[in-house]
Image (cartoon, rainbow, N blue to C red; front, side, top):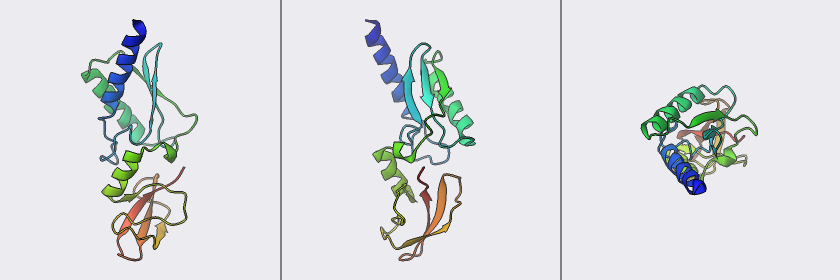
Amino acid sequence: MATAVKDLDEAAVMAVLEKIPDPEIPVLSITDLGIVRGFADDPPRVRISPTYTGCPATVAIEMLIREALDNAGFSHVHIERVLFPPWSTDWISERGRQRLKAYGIAPPDPSATAECPQCGSVDTEEVSRFGATPCKAQWRCKSCLEPFERFKCH
């Protein structure tokens, strides 16, 4: 009986987390972004990994999680920041990758070129390794001439 309650709590907690948007890219949930590492017991806690150590959005995300858990009646669930293994862009869900592209950000890809999220061309070039946030680089499409951001692989 206790196992069924634990499973129900975990599913309910994860359902709450799926509704929390990333503060920097609001079309992504924190689960789409892959920073939610899971749920653990004793004590019950949500495990999260920042996209990189020192990410300024981490504290904001933790506050959003705390507020959402409290509002859903899960004030007893703790939040645990996990740094190892470090977050990887491989953890972004397929739905998250599709949402990034629809939002105008090229999803991470280890290839040397990026697909333009506006026109689909791969005739693109990196303009700057540094974008609006440390997770992204600034790119330009040579076909449609539109600038766009690309999520860096890591």
